[in-house]
Length: 245
Image 1: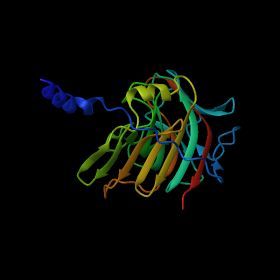
Image 2: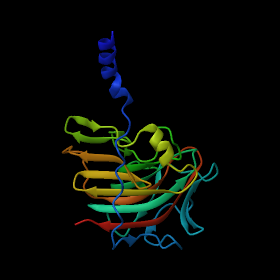
Image 3: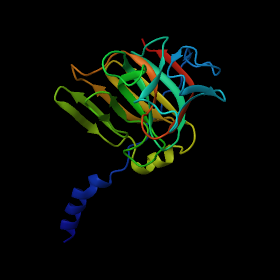
């Protein structure tokens, strides 16, 4: 009987494995370039109805009377993201979601709902704490892969699809403690070669490598999202970047 109990326990253990030891974000290096001056939207381009500077932060907001015509973005116009380290802080409300686009493309032709449509890798932004619908996962904005890599996962995307390496970078309870509801949260995104890592409030929450020969993105624009649909707001501050050699 004891032997059967031990065997059963061994079979069930994987379901109760907790998150691995936290992996801290690297210390911020010298030479980061500030992308927002805290006063106006110099160097950025977006729908002037929706994007302003409020109390020293970038403020994007939609209302029932002033709605977004499809997902719309505030696009950084003074550079691109290739191999990079991006750091910023955000906060938003919970009625909708936002995002940070990187290595993405500004779409100006075809059927687009507005002049600021961006497609590509998106770092999801949400004001929620229940996995998997939280800030930090990679979404294929405007593409066909959907949620490319979820929070907690180390994964690759090969020619034949997604391959999960492990999913214990952060668990549900740890994320609830890590994320600051209704408050500012710090994001670090590091992209080098085919690998992208997302950090939240100083902890690694996602590690993704895109080996798909047709769909992987190596360079493109940086942008901030206001999502179509329910009225929402999102704010951003202390946006800085450096190119990785």
